[in-house]
Length: 203
Image (tube, rainbow, N blue to C red; front, side, top):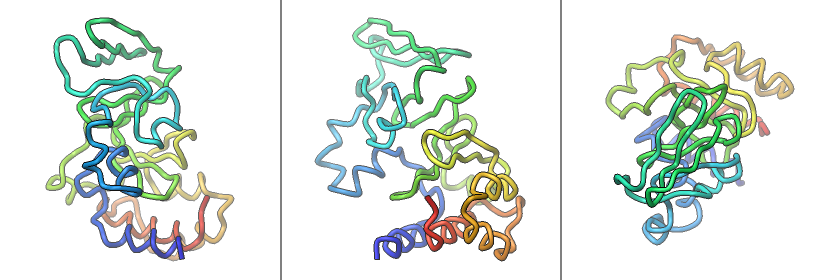
């Protein structure tokens, strides 16, 4: 029953619609966002994947200001809170939230979290800022990335990589093979991948 509920929620929404932060998505699962809005920092550091999954950075603040902001460099992130600097090597943190958008740092690149489906482990990313709803309609899968979960490696989003990363999930791979999917499909058609993901109980 739980899988059916998750699948309905995936199919009912356009893929990447409004690309909200994972925090808003995860909190909305259990209660209304409004009741928690003041408790969720719009900026902060995710020290590990668990903090990202919980939707709340360990260290963070609300609105950006001269005394409170985040700066990114090639191999480190600096959190400035109340005018005090704390430096983090990108290799030592999971990622960060900046202006209410979540980023995962991987191999010194900042991958914007484009979509973290409710109840599923898989995460989709872009390099750079998350694009808006209007421009996403004509974008293709090849512009995106994914990871099997919040702790696994990030790969370019293409059919070959999906089948390789999930090679231990044979029914899922077989469903992908039967789906007539291609790397040139519009990004919203990745809903077909997610449907197969849920139907086959991928973990």
